[in-house]
Image (tube, rainbow, N blue to C red; front, side):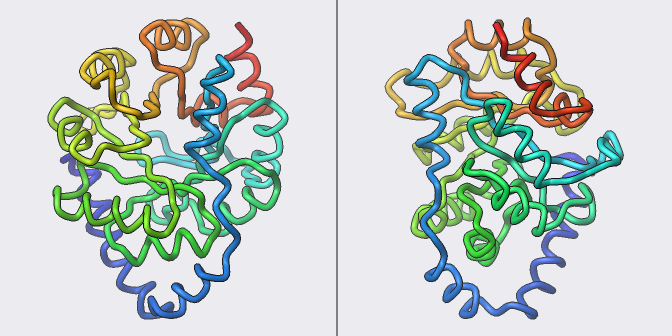
Length: 265
């Protein structure tokens, strides 16, 4: 685990305890029970693949620990609409406050602005966060294998499914992949970013994709460092047809146009 991830997780634990005091689980559970049904994050990606198309998870992100502010003029609702016009399959919205300058309201605004399913991109370490995500309207949550021991990973994966949330289980290397496969996930993310150096190499996705059993009914998502049409072609040739892309789009004047251009071939 990198020093940056360790700092994020330490702060996230503090943040969750603070937020739990303000919003007890019982109140969140009632809000979840009254919430509309999720939009079907995995189903949307599967439908795109059945149609022979790339499944594109377009990310709404203002900043990151490694790059600082990525987009000064940040409007989650406008970005969501731009992505929808550009052909995105789903959205990913960063909601971490301290390291990514995100906010829960960013997710609510993005989801209200379009009909796309939305991933809450955050560092999930406690079951309370699953209820919070569901109450906010998230259709999917992220579980980072590097951030969790196996018992907690399995618990959060199971509880999320009990709340009708889809789960993106994210790995970075072979050991994490083996741990993720033990869950038989419906949605598996391969992050091309090295957690220690923060360098990105799409070869990470190529290597790990080859180790996923062919009989596993799972949508495999390649994440980070995808910037050119050649990257997309290389990944699709390796049977990777779902993409999570943020920085490449968020640095463009019109994110949805950048999405169209990247996947035009």
